[in-house]
Amino acid sequence: MNNTFDAIVNPVVTKNTPDPGDAAILVSSTSDLKPLARGLEADGDLDMRKLFMSHHYIGTCGSARVSLVGPIMGAPYAVALLDTLVAWGVKQVLFLGWCGSVSSQVAIGDIIVPDLAFIDEGTSRHYGTENESVQCPPGRLTDLVVASLERTGGTCRRGAVWTTDAIYRETKQQVRRFQAKSALAVEMEVSALFSAARFRGVEISCLLVTSDRLHDMRWQPGFRDSRFTTGRQQAVNAILNVLPQLQGLMDG
Image (cartoon, rainbow, N blue to C red; front, top):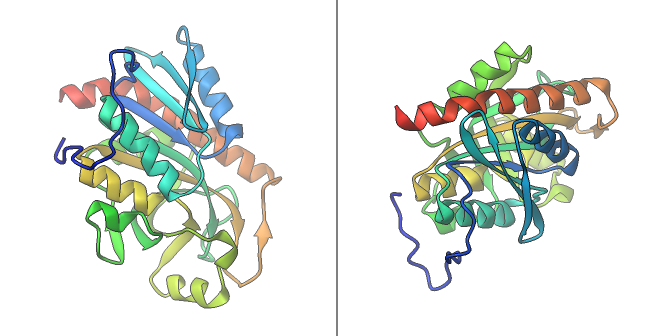
């Protein structure tokens, strides 16, 4: 770990702290948490406890011990979970969330794997990120995720997203501002997760499924669209398929 936990208040680690494994999956929606839990349970026993306001499952996928945590909403809460899991021993983080497209090229159900996030949230600056954007920390995890998506029949777009604290302040002016920066979509966690993962020295990769569209300054919800259901299932399958490779990634 590149940065120690040197704040006045840090995650609690005791003799009763569970072993979370090297990898953790953070999931924004309960409806995506359930199929991931079923996927882990198929490989053996699945232990469930509470972590803050979320469910924390610990199971295995292949030979890899894995944590699964959700639901999650917003940058501060997502990073508090990441910090806790890293203090407990997690070295790789996968995040599955939803997003609203601000690009006309992104349709309902499309999967975005961000490699850059524009910061419009208040958490990143506490983790040493003072710029207007933050890149995904280096590592091979994102390449594995993209390859897994392709093997399981899904496709993805790689590019920039806009992370906001205020979903009800996605104004026309804001949308145009981030369209001009070539953002593909808007969501609530990625830039903070990138900043915290970089600060803590862990790998991270994020998958976002497009749930709605804002690109033409009108809100077009797609939560009941079959393409959204398909995209979410493809993202879940990709995560479950990449998990057995993570032990080899750490060893390599």
